[in-house]
Length: 450
Ligand SMILES: Nc1ncnc2c1ncn2[C@@H]1O[C@H](COP(=O)(O)OP(=O)(O)O)[C@@H](O)[C@H]1O
Ligand SMILES: [Mg+2]
Image (tube, rainbow, N blue to C red; front, side, top):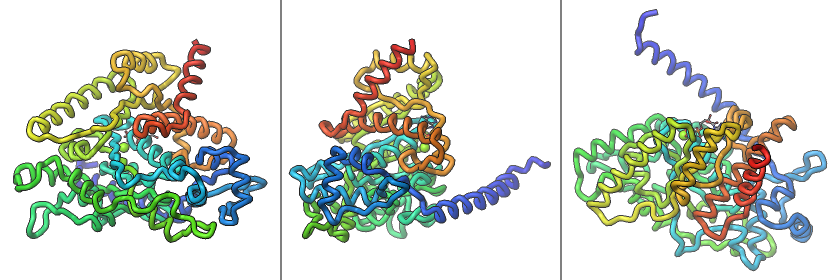
């Protein structure tokens, strides 16, 4: 073999393209079979009792039919959304069923960022987005800032987004307007065009600005703009300005109690409401601290830093935190601007509970920064690999053996607790108690274990 890197990369790239085509085919054919949920599980999502939901189902002709698997009646995520609309139509507190933004509410932009790869940024971000849809009926805009497109893979396939995006698909680089046109060094797209960059996914109300290889152009374009210094825009405001422009033209119009007419959900109205605005935006980062990522930070109201707990990881984390702090201070010296005015938090991930070092590290961090560290965290799980193998989240994965199901259910419990803790910080008063229950159980087990 000659050491020809160009040839090696060419051949490898061709092979990988073919491999990806077959991934695409598999996902399209399977139509992204999503997990279906029992009446009991739906009641939990809706935060009502099972008897109440059963009674409500009997009394309402428009209650979704579901499907019988054996003796169990199960429902899709679309049917769950339909239930929400139906319940909100008659409820005293319709926003309990559809936790939609009111016109005067701010738009949270929540970033999952860290400088290190493999810290479960994408997994945490995808599961948080899906959790908000399942438990609150929120309309979530997911933005993929990583050319590796991990979170895009979580949402591609099925009716909404049947194919992997190509280089022609608009990505965050387009959204931020970073490409030059014939007459300008950057492009301020109008709000309607920006809205068209959010692609529908198989999750009702969840839309995605996907990533692909070209997303790495973002950094090159910013570097160009930094050197060209076009009038009218600072190098760190591209995404922020675009999101604000989109937001101001896509304010909430429909209230949750306006979707039912003559005892039936008006489907057209519900579909329109699901894409008229977003209740929050979630950005999944590239593991790097670049000017492009800085644009994402500047656009964010909240930063979640998913972080593994090994000694080396904490050192990387310190580099990231100090690097970002330096960049922010530079900006704040030049402009009075609010950045990350919401809750910011460090989320420990892939924690090995059998490993004292991990737990000691968390205890240590909690002692020194009690407000900054989330006391609920992601435990290392082997089950996640089963779902990842088929490009699915644990909220979608339908386990085929009791053993796998048990592992996945345990991971769901963990994910629900983490997500509930995040909700508690981001939307005070909305938490369901999964986080507190998890903390109690975890520390009780821990005492028994020791
Ligand atoms: N709690 C966990 N237990 C075991 N493996 C995990 C866990 N969370 C994430 N992983 C795995 O770690 C890898 C990296 O996760 P990912 O979310 O892609 O990280 P990042 O986006 O930070 O690079 C993936 O293979 C994922 O399945
Ligand atoms: Mg990632």
